Image 1: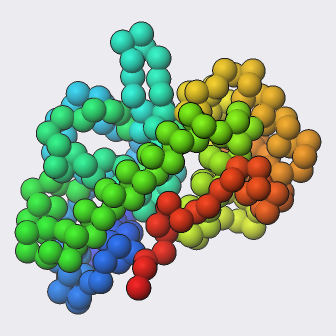
Image 2: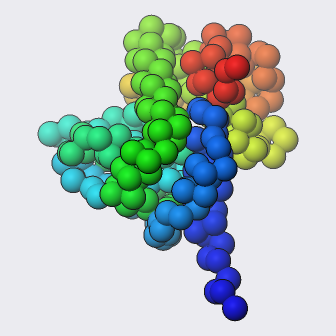
Length: 249
């Protein structure tokens, strides 16, 4: 009798298939090839670095649960958060193509990850081009999100910056089936919001209070609550097209 499959490994396969199917058209042979991968899974604690700036990793990470963040560290030790990631995301897929990590990835809360060996992914891309094209498109989506973040931090008002980040996280969580009514997980502290948006802590606090007073959104105890979605979109100037969440015909 064959051994019972590890449910965490199955979870890696399902999330990876879901991700690549969003960005390409897969055949049954593509699905079978993904299910032959042998990833490792492990738990990571809040604040733990999964990969560090300057590392030369030999695996790529897919997030199974919790939240991860990408960040740069300056010579002074100051930190700039670049993006936040939810279940199904592959925040360091570019490590498959670039030999040295130019940023770090850490856990924002207790999380679980799958580690996919680079050699297996490279073989998968060579033998199953549809998967390779899907992963390639995924890196373009990353670039689209980064362009939006540059615009957000450089051209929007302080309040709009925060509102836009909230819209982005809630919309991504909604598309991934990770919301509970008006709520989604967002285990980010005020200081970390400032490090993501280029804002002083006092400015973050004022913006949070403004969104709360205006009954638009509230961040409390690691949960983001959307109180007025149309109103929050208006303040943020949010258009989700740049997220490319739904596959185009």
